[in-house]
Image 1 (spheres, helix red, strand yellow):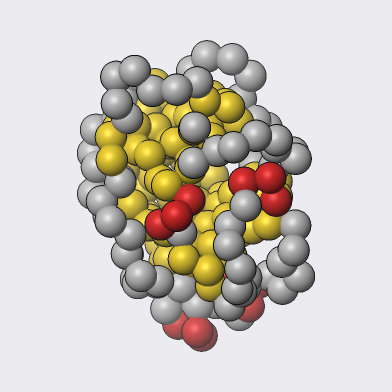
Image 2: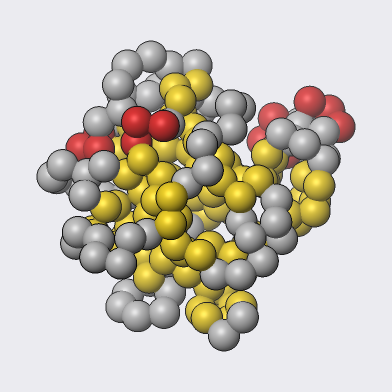
Length: 176
């Protein structure tokens, strides 16, 4: 996966966002699912949990990513409702262990499980709000421009190298 540019931190007067999951205020999305590379023969392991991290409600992804048996990922993913409007990207509030993580998007036109639009970000050991512009997502085993109205799934992943993953998500939104 090609690392994206360092995501920008949220400006103080950002345009209104479409909140998809807010662990600290409003209704959190409850249909997140946890996956590992075991679906393709890998041996990575971990878990997804809801807890308080550094004083904030969060959805957490933890585990060990292993490259054995052609594996190499753990993931928490959420199917999205159809979204209307002109959105420029994904906004996330995250805290982690200083490692790089992936954010993968799937659209209505994708028919194979490995197809996605991908970017990466660093999850620092303090809460940060990051903006991940759609124009920096790279198609993976798929072609075509990313259209926000076609979004169907978002996944946060520890992927591509052997390491201990520790990622907390406090909020996920689309921004204008």
